[in-house]
Length: 158
Image (cartoon, rainbow, N blue to C red; front, side, top):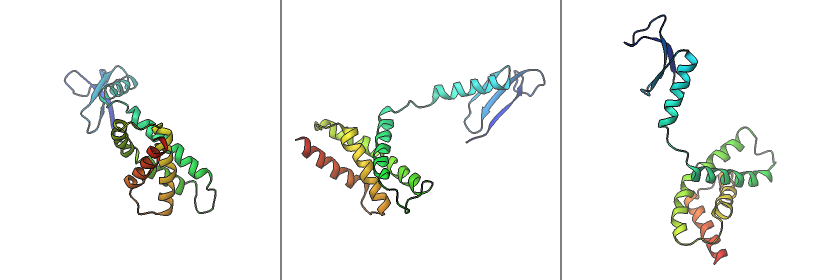
């Protein structure tokens, strides 16, 4: 996280003992003023939030259903080879990193009239199967696995 500087400042940006406070995030070029340090920080955060990129709901849904798939896979794996702090988090991280790939494929498949429910039938299943691939140390690419799942699901719904 970048540093935040909060200090007293006058109208000419010179530090003064009895003037307003400013807040600035290092490297961002964003700053804000307030009559207290807390107000200056709140103003800075509001300015940053206003320029932040929007929330990608589609990506969030993919991540959620990928995580559900991983949870399904891991719930049946209580063996000593998987520990909660290392392997669980590594596997979940590796799987949810594939969310942009699934969003990209969904945009293509949607045009072809996929008959199932993408998040349930493809994303969650991919989460389960890719978690297994990650745990096994497979050399298969995520795109290959996803294509196999999509083909299978399209065949089911035809």
